[in-house]
Image (cartoon, rainbow, N blue to C red; front, side):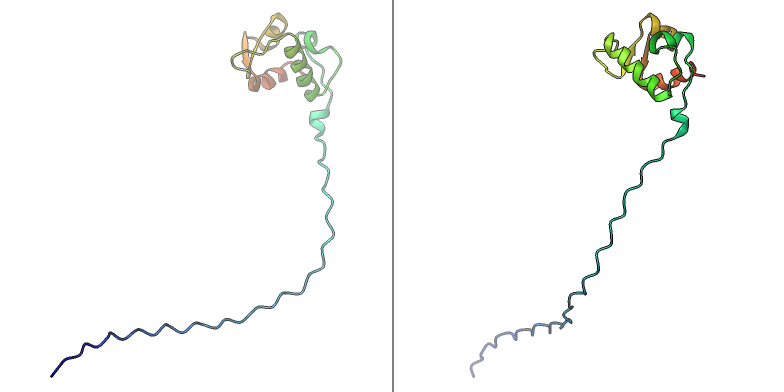
Amino acid sequence: MATAKKAPAKKAAPAKKVTAVKTAAPAKKAAAPVPAKKRAVNAAFMKPLTPSAALAAVVGATPLPRTEVVSKLWVYIKKHKLQDATNKRNINSDDKLKAVFGKAQVTMFEMAGLIGKHLS
């Protein structure tokens, strides 16, 4: 009696699930674009403040908003090349700025706080 080898039975592939085909949703009407709101100006920044005598030597004696004082200070710093060459965030004080800042070198982040003491 000869024994014949039977080939292993192949497993049946699992049945695929049938999914419903979705149809495209009807196109919605395009909403009108909402215009961007303009930012309201903060009145505290635009209020003219009188600089002290030491600060007036740099930016002038007329009352200016805080933002303009900072801008004029940067113009003065750039004009007199007072920005540190190696670290541009530092400002080297000359005689006029030393009277405002109270030290020989300040960072640009300290500058705003030190200026506030000279505005009223």
